[in-house]
Structures are given as C-alpha cells and as structure tokens.
Length: 79
Image (cartoon, rainbow, N blue to C red; front, side):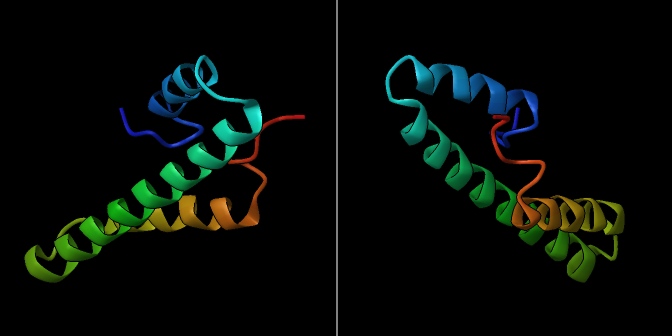
C-alpha cells in the first residue's frame, strides 16, 4: 500500500491524517508523501534497468505517474 494519493494507501493515509490535522495541512503532507514515494519508485525502477536489465514497464509506469503529478490534474484533491 503505497501512500500515493490516487492509490489505496494514499486514501488510507488521507483518512488518517484528516482525523488529526486540517484539510490544507493534510493536502500538503499527502502531496509531499506522493512525490517522495513516486521518486523512490522511479529510482528503484532505474536501478532495475541499469543493474538487472529489467523493469522497463515499472520505469514507464513511474514516469507516467510523475508526469501526472506535475501536471496536477490527477493528484489534486477534487474541489
């Protein structure tokens, strides 16, 4: 369960954070966690591609998620 906003782990983290913090603070914490875990997933996929010559699908999946993160449409809270 990765704490990425549109995944199940992100939704669980959001619910847990909302019970302790304000919605604005929850949004910023969740956005930071999403970026951190997407970056770690990208780094792991790049490692797999370089060292083991495998993981190209994970690499492109992560690149797609990172592009959507910076585009802001998918990972923003619905208004």
